[in-house]
Length: 55
Length: 242
Figure 1 (cartoon, rainbow over the protein chains, first blue to last red):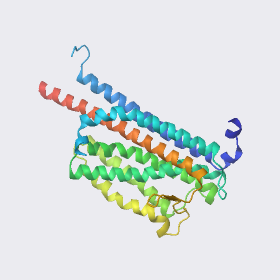
Figure 2 (cartoon, rainbow over the protein chains, first blue to last red):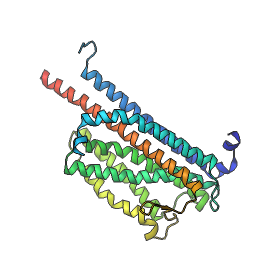
Figure 3 (cartoon, rainbow over the protein chains, first blue to last red):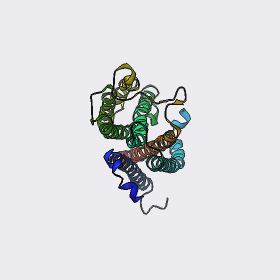
Figure 4 (cartoon, chains in turn blue, yellow):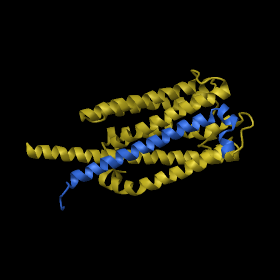
């Protein structure tokens, strides 16, 4: 694995930067979508069932 | 279609489907990129730089495909006023814009070792850049409409007008003399000019990226529906207090 990561041809051909930018973009997008969904659904649950309510 | 346009029914299905789609997307993307990086051979002409294809092509397909679904959702919102159509369009737009940006950046990084330049005002590259601007325009307009609490009429019309760019993207490599290569895969004829050793990781990453796109859209739709419930509840409480 180490040998592959340090392969100069993969750096010279911009393969690592292209993969890094793509993965950062994908992970960022997934994290943003997940966090915004969890936050909104939590808020909706709290509004629906106020704290301390037995309903 | 009408059956699933009910937000409650949609949420019930989305809660089950979202984790499955997200996990499938992660697994297929990881497999495709891993094989593409470490197990597939270099191209006989392009050498190692062909490995950028495994991120560039799926991002390009989803950038363009995402816009098509944005336009379909917008048309549905305009014509049938489905409660979920506007939400779907607003959920698709940021994902589509991000995939288009990834396509442009990875393509530019692929262009340097292949063509000797990061950018040329080539028909394919320029039409993809216009696609990104269309997404950004849609995002700005729909955010402004959402803030005012109005219907997504202007943004839906913009999304429909922008569809004209899709055939231009597709046929740009045939209509004009471009640096960008012609298509190597035909979905219509189910044929490919790519060797199987390179095609397998490409198809895996296309499938993986597509599932991730779907997961992002589903999560954004769930977030927007939850926010709508909060807003509706706040309005009812304010009315009751008034």
